Length: 279
Image 1 (tube, rainbow, N blue to C red):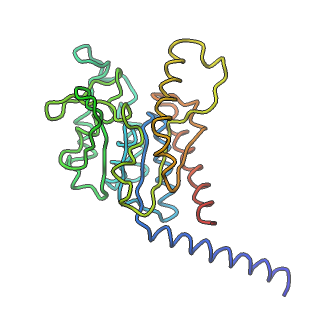
Image 2 (cartoon, rainbow, N blue to C red):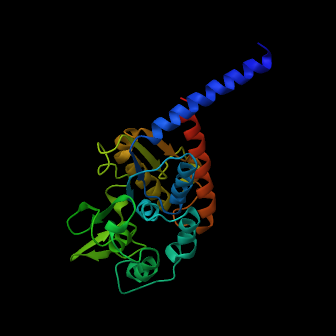
């Protein structure tokens, strides 16, 4: 056997193993968990692009805050281009709808008609995948999962980050950002699928002392640590968890970071999927 033959044999063996691993994963039912995290959540779209390229498809999706919005677009069958356009063209991260009449700087209700353009049926039941959305009931101090009936209201509620966005009234109750009480909603999916893929964009890497110079920075750091600590057991329960330290320098409402966060998610997911499939 020549050196070339040996190389070809190793290549063929590796390809067969890769193909078998891919088929094994593709044959499993998959659940996709998408965390909150503002603009950083564009990394979720990159993950979904990589999933498509590797033949992976989630039959069940659960999301909080921006993860709920990305999850809804994915469950709705929107393309990657349409998902990115939604966040680039919809004034979610702009201050177009300022208000002094509600408990929030931006009137969340003003987004309803915009969302209707993407979800004309306004219904969970018409989505192509099962979707679970979590929001926080501000009056009862409880988290609530939505998975049937009207869609747009729960989406707006799940992404209504206080005090920037005003709460959303649903069934006589005021709701706000799902990430307040559950930034990584694994619960609706756990035990119902063969494989759980998690995408967490609420990262908490090491900070230098100079990054904690004022009370705003300190408050943000403490909040981030609390959210991560609360959700850590659920993050570790995923069959594959994607986290993105490169997102730390992108602000939660920094529209300029949309494309960068998207590419970080795509590149990181491809590396992780290669590792998973190579066994």
